[in-house]
Image (tube, rainbow, N blue to C red):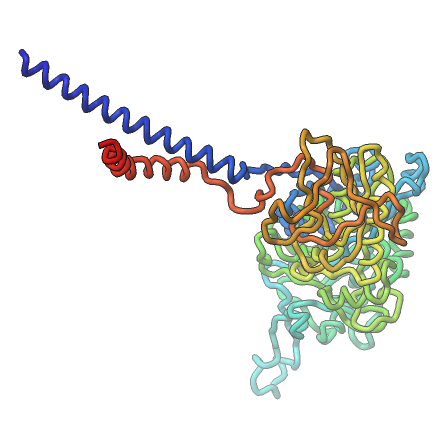
Length: 596
């Protein structure tokens, strides 16, 4: 009995000793963690993004994802939400207050401006993105352009080998490196295809027959001339009268507007002819709705429109050849030729058009740039102006913002978006096959960003700051950092309970308390005299990571080391506990020797 009692007592002693050791280790770890946290500072900083919403054109839909990703990576992220409703609905949504900005290549109408108290004065308008109208073609299914030409009479007894009289070949388009696979289509033929004009081809030279073919058919002699084929060519598996089915936009958009402008300018005979044969349809004034959608296929948005190019084998309305249709023609942004996964549907090509200079050109970054460099903000400039190697169907989309009533965050966010899109964001255009803003329009956009700040940063709790720093909402980029002095809008300092250290300059390295000056509660940076700003505007030096203006806006600030590595509580706690277990034995023996 006494033996069992002794065992139980020893077990209790061992359990009690283990529990004390565990508790001691835990307390030691917590103590070290708390000391470290006090010394280091709690560096876990969650920065909430600001939301900016936009609507309008499908022109930038291929660039948009890259822009959104870049803006979301800033110190203070911008959550850019853009919905390409089409330009007409986009402007309506913007006027109804459902978006912070609208992007459109067709300007506000008089009726739309009448909804604003001060008309156009209530808007700030900046050029922001170069758009092009590519003519995307899914070749006739299933043969493509497979031609047959009779070069001799196989029934002539003098022909040694009758099989050589029939020559079959496949026409794939121009083989120049920049234009590989593009097809030359004269403006009159293309215009007839787009509007469904039933007029006839011009008579071919005698004695060649077939003057009854439609101008919009693939067998029209003027198109065969552009393809470099004889007028005796026949297309294998295709009716001589067949032309492409049009897939147009059912939503009201700038694409429809510029399609009609192209037809009216480049093919006035076709424009007059289609109005005469469809007198019940109102073609003018030209608007963003296509007047004649009942006889063609149409889709809502450029994405759905170009998806139809991948389905040429379904039925006549989607391009399967019949007596009337062969292939699918979709006027859409040139960048839409590649789908969202980055690959091109088989058999899809772009068309080459003839510009005013007489060049056959397709939409490439170089030819689009040539057009906008020469014409600036004038739409379709190379269509009726003599510009070498310039693609004719090019225009500039504008971004419109309200000139008053924006919040501080909206003001700074929109100014930053414009600066980014006009500088570093332009590089995205070339990657997707579009053009970029010329320097003159970049300058205009940057001036517009400053105008947004000037006109909106007027609230009693706001401060206008001039700085070469792109600001906390800006993605990192060489273009943004090279802009120079620009205006920012931030909230005035809240009143902190203690003085807060405010760095006057920042670098990419973590900053320390010694790198700044003390800002007393409620103070703002001292005004600096500058010829381009008023005396109440604060000037701060250029930074890379966080703007000095942000520190004014966001007082009280997080700990100064918050840009450095994050304090690891778990590791510190475990290290403290391990230290206790390793050192408690030696420490106990050392203290024992001191007391003996």
